[in-house]
Length: 317
Image 1 (cartoon, rainbow, N blue to C red):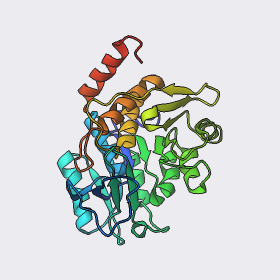
Image 2 (cartoon, rainbow, N blue to C red):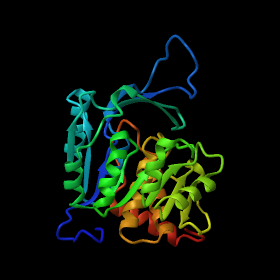
Image 3 (cartoon, rainbow, N blue to C red):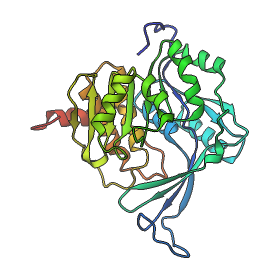
């Protein structure tokens, strides 16, 4: 799992996850969009817990047996302590850089069908935020791969990671294919994930990413419609069917992060990209059965068993 410039003896981190540490307040609402009213009675309640995109990718990779390390800006506030406790309890090493503006936070409104609407506190970041280059360099020297979250400090870390010889992945989330901010991430990564939710023509955007950047693989997830896979600039676009979740869907929060973790674990092991997508689909389906108030991810044995079962089924993947 190491890059050509890093020997296995020197590498003790399979995946370095940058950015995406934070806290979400989960609010289960009777429907989305939420009708205007003076008040709503909320059950099962309102809960604040650690876990944003970088936290959940790190958790997914860790549960799949990869040596994972997380690096991000974290505040000296109660929310920061939730992030630190999350990493301690899950056994995921965290290198935190003090952030005077405080730990990133969001509110997630979750409907009965598991759909969510996220409200991000934009005051918890600044254009001048940086991850110290010497810290990035030191961790990159120990790593085989880096997954880069879509946050301002990580954009400035991309050249340092590339100079270290790492392969890179990123998740553009709901990019519309034109916002300039996302382009540095889209064009520097070797594996690019994004959601198709804001794309009129997913294939056009995926091919543009492959043509203008370094990506050898581009994956657009489409929820219950499955995912689309582009394996090289001139390759045909492949539709990957969705996997039936093993239990009722209760929350889509973290499904994309789980997909990325499952895909990357297989990709770093050298699996064909279609097989990687199946691993991602199984991991993402499992995540939809987990309430957002609980931190959980599919384990390596369970993932392998489900992939084997699906491949063995008549007309299987």
